[in-house]
Length: 231
Ligand code: DC
Image 1 (cartoon, rainbow, N blue to C red):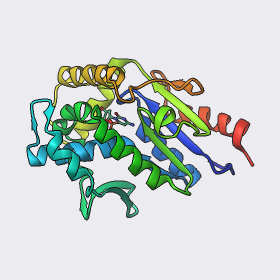
Image 2: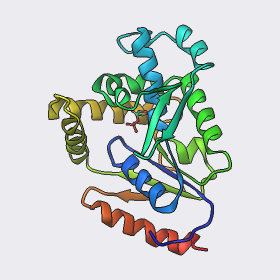
Image 3: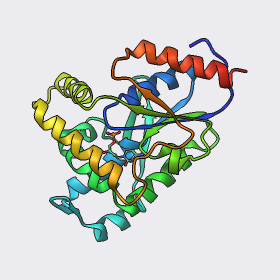
Image 4: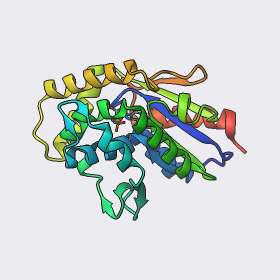
């Protein structure tokens, strides 16, 4: 994108598998912004829970988890192949995208202690930088003052198909019905939990990309950036 814009925070929220992270990554790349993937941090905490066995079904052992969050170093590194999520020195990018993590992440993300941890991490990582962030509550809770807020939506079956294509490309053996069920559950939990439910900020612009190509989305964004933030 050939565009010189002001230093702003771009917050992208919306339902699972609406393409928030692909969109945010491309924006970061085109504009030279730092990309922060808040879902990856929730997934990192979920991996910690799974690897330590701190759960029974969907009941998370917060007595074990909460103190462990004090020393948990989740961050992002980019070694030329795009942003990767790290737990300390260990790259956990592949593990956090598995179905096991996807199946447990919503109950983990519903915990107040986990939300406080991730919010603090995000604010810290965003300090003094031009950032684009994606998640569920970036424009409402984490950065309510973000200069540009986008709320992404798309038809549920179209989203399930996108997720399926992604997982199949990674060699995971999954069925469409399993993915659709997981997506429906996540939509429900994400928008009904007590702590920071998924909501559209009043000043967010809706982007429904059910029938849009990636290039059309970028063109849509470019118009907004030109109108509002060009220097
Ligand atoms: O975007 P994702 O699918 O990687 O997110 C994983 C989960 O994390 C999702 O089910 C909801 C939760 N999440 C959240 O509650 N708040 C955010 N800001 C980002 C993600």
